[in-house]
Amino acid sequence: QAASGQDFEAAADMRNKLSDIKSLQQKIMFGDKEFLDISKDRALGEVTDLLDLTKVPTRIEGFDISHMSGRNVVASMVVFSNGVSDRANYRKFKTKQEQNDDFKNMHETILRRFSDKNIKDWGSPDLVLIDGGKGQLDAAISARNERGSDIPFIGLAKREEQIVIKLDGSNVQLSHEKLAELDGYLTKSQDYILINLPHSSDVVKLLQRIRDESHRFAVSYHSVLKRSEKRGSQLDEIPGVGPVTTKKLIRSFGSLRGVKEASIEDLSLVVGESKAKAIHRYLLG
Image (cartoon, rainbow, N blue to C red; front, side, top):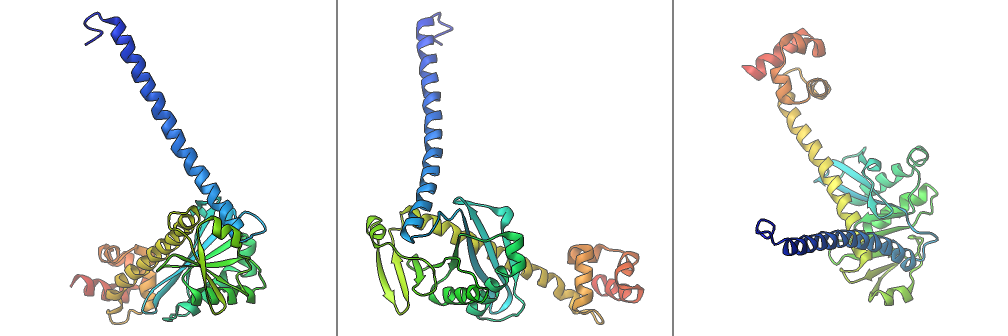
């Protein structure tokens, strides 16, 4: 309206104000990004000082276990590089034994993670975070020791978001000065130290992100296996079709629906004509 009314001075003034607003928005956006970067770097620095690590943990790995009463037991390994999730380096494990024992499942997972082959292929972390309290951490440290590694291991207990340290196994040295600086306090439980920090602290936020991501990744893999098991269960009910045949069918056709839609000729190429006819008749009859 200012321009159309030939009020060019007012129009210019308005244009300048809009330009100032855009400039301010850019500064705010840059400022937010800069703050996030500083916060992340500060968190890594504070973890280094709090645990008296020999170097900044540029690669932190988080581990969690997921299963349903000992069925489809899986474990996750997530990686945070320089405080940021590094999904290309995530790994998942299907335990070799189905057991309703998180301590044994964690022990097997860490034992496999720190095998010579996996160390060669994936490298080594600077710090390991275990999702859980004293029991899970103890099992993880035991497996690490069996592999002859001295990587620092800590836990994060869910209920109070306490950082868990084993006095003779975590390979860290708590800085009481840094703990006080961060407004934290500790409690001792047998051979363990439980560190309590404000939940708003950068350290807790970083460790929570890693723990939550390891939990999410483990649960998602467990869900995939559950769905796969459910898909195969109807096939297992077919006379003459066992787990091996079921796996072949799911691998070849992708899903139970894919098997149902396959022709007898296609099924025959995978399991033979006799079984193909039986499967086709059972699923469509």
